Each structure stands twice: as C-alpha cells, then as structure tokens.
Length: 300
Ligand SMILES: Nc1nc2c(ncn2[C@@H]2O[C@H](COP(=O)(O)OP(=O)(O)OP(=O)(O)O)[C@@H](O)[C@H]2O)c(=O)[nH]1
Ligand SMILES: [Mg+2]
Image (cartoon, rainbow, N blue to C red; front, side, top):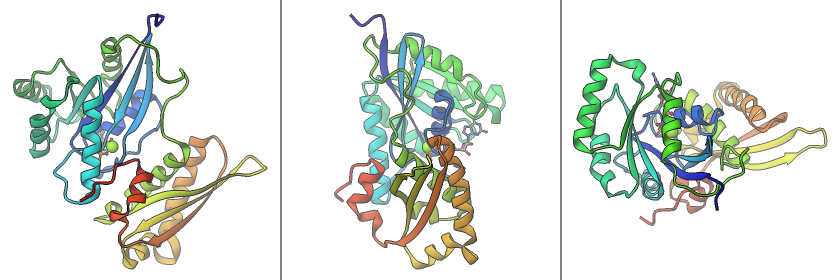
C-alpha cells in the first residue's frame, strides 16, 4: 500500500541559458539553484522537491547541454544526460527567442535514446509573438513527438502552475522519497558557495567566471546564533586574482556583501562571510574540485 501517493523524477534539460534554473526556483518557491545572464551557469545537478496533491515531484536541474571542449564541460554535459536517462520524465526546455540552434538540434538527436517520457517546455514566451510560438511548437513536435507541450515564462511564472499540475499526474505510484517539508537536496555549504559564484558571474566578464570556482571551507556556528563562513574562490591566473579582488579590494568586497546577504537569508541566521582568493592553475584538472561540485571526474 502506498496510501495513494505518487513520486517521480523530472529532469529539466536544455541548451545553456534556456531558463532551467529559473524554472526550478519558481516551482520550488525558493532559490535552490543559481541563475545568471551568462550561459553555463549550473555545473552540478540540483534537486528541487515539490508537492502537487498526493504527488511528490522531484525536479532535477541540470547543466546546459552544448558541444563540450574542456574537461569541466564534458563532466557537466555527462551529468545532464545521466539525469535525463534516470528520470521518469525528461522536460526539454527551449528558449523560444533562440529557437532551434545547433545545441537544440544535437539534444533532439540524442533525446530519443532516453527511456523517459518526453515533454517540451517552450520558455521565455514573454519575448516573442504567439504565431511564432505555435510554429516552433509544431516544428519541434515534428522532429520528436512529445507527450505534451507547454508554453511558459519561467521568469514571470506564466504557465508554471499548469505545468506542475500536469507533471503531478504523470508521476508513478509510490511512496514519497523526501520528507514533505524538504525542498532541495543541496547542502547549505554548497548552496552558500553557489550563491557566491552567482555574484562572481554577475560582476565579472569574459572568461573569468568560467575559469573560477568557489568552495565553502568552514561553517562554524557561533554562540550568538550567527555563522562564520569561510570560502575560497579558486582562479587560474595571478591576473584573474587581481580582477576578482579589484582596486583596493572593491570588487571582492561587493561580491562578499551581496553573497553574505543572500546566504544569511538562505540559512536563516546572521552570516559572517570571509572570502579568500587562491590561484590554482590546474583546478580544472583536479579531481577533488569535481567532488565538491558533485560531478564525476572525466578521465580524459
Ligand atoms: N525574458 C525571459 N528571461 C528568462 C526567462 N526564464 C529565464 N530567463 C533568463 O534567462 C537567463 C538564464 O536563466 P537560467 O535559469 O540561469 O538558465 P539555465 O538554463 O539554468 O542556464 P545554464 O545553467 O547556464 O544551463 C537569465 O538571465 C534568466 O533571467 C523567461 O521566461 N523570460
Ligand atoms: Mg542553470
């Protein structure tokens, strides 16, 4: 007996920047995964847990799928495909303004290999006119017949309640895997590191955000109820360190202030955030960094 409950996994997959993390945050009603204007923001998978009537839907935010070059890219793309393969439903998010580009084409080519039910989620409908939307829906469904097509704006929340409702109905019968009040599987120290990385993405340009990573080294609860949090920002060059620190320490201070505020909110306690910047030329080839990101280390 399962008490009439159902539970399953929905992998959110798509090209970088399609709006997967924005959508999972809206569905969960809280920030569980970081978002930025830049592509390739999400590096590891993040689960966001949502209740819809008697159904528990475990959404899996994944890194964007693109033609990988570096080792880290390969690890990210592999993690996304693995999530799609293990899910009950694979939801393909497409940025309607971008339409079907090479990344989307490549995803459409490989998606049939996944045993999951496939649904299409056209996102960013606030950016184009309805006739174009219908055209795109028809085109994509002619390439791969989706079980259902949704049109949403993850940014504004349009169409998201309907998406959640219909996905609830697709979940297989079974007991809930998570306690009913749990919203994510991300440990607070990892979320805190991700929040700081989001602020790096916000403030730094060009290749720097892609060649840096953030780790929480210490989380110490203080007698007054606050937390002392130490994080390290790894960069690849001395010159990068200078940019992250900024003139007179201005950039790192701004990153720290913005991150501390949000980490305090997420943790529900006052935070003292201490940031260190370290040059680690080869961190992209260091297996330990991948463990921290929750990724498998590709051997070559
Ligand atoms: N106009 C508009 N912008 C959106 C919408 N959804 C997401 N965005 C924006 O698109 C950008 C990328 O959003 P993310 O949620 O980080 O995208 P992602 O698919 O998780 O990206 P990666 O993690 O890099 O694969 C951000 O600037 C979002 O604000 C939407 O419905 N409308
Ligand atoms: Mg993302």
